[in-house]
Image 1: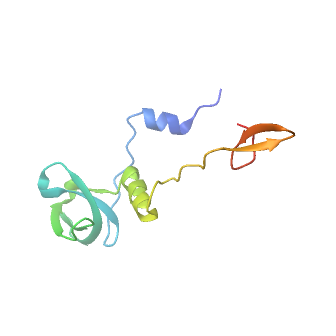
Image 2: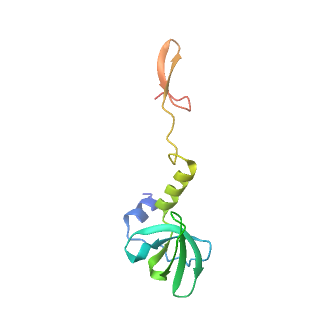
Image 3: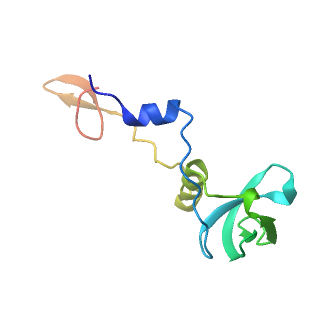
Amino acid sequence: QGMDVMACLVESDFEPPPKKLSVGDRAEGNWQMEGDYYGGFVTASTPETITIQYDDDASFETLPISDVRPESLSAYIERLRLMAGGDFPPEPPEPSTQNVGGENLRVNQYRNVV
């Protein structure tokens, strides 16, 4: 029987190998080593540290490499949502009512009866 690979990855303890971050990459830094990660751009790196310029206030912070991670998928989606100025992905339009053969039917944007 077929197996849903994505479901297996989500349900497992799978962690992708760490990505080497370079100047210009999106990343999240452990703000002031307090455990809260915020997004920004890598502006400098050494073998031991990475400097991030944070999105929210444009401040800079240099952190040990262990306290910086690549931007998460959820942060990426949130950033896209904010850039789109609303919901992302956008909500589908509400079905409308149309008269078909003398009968009022609710149809979606693809003209399928719902």
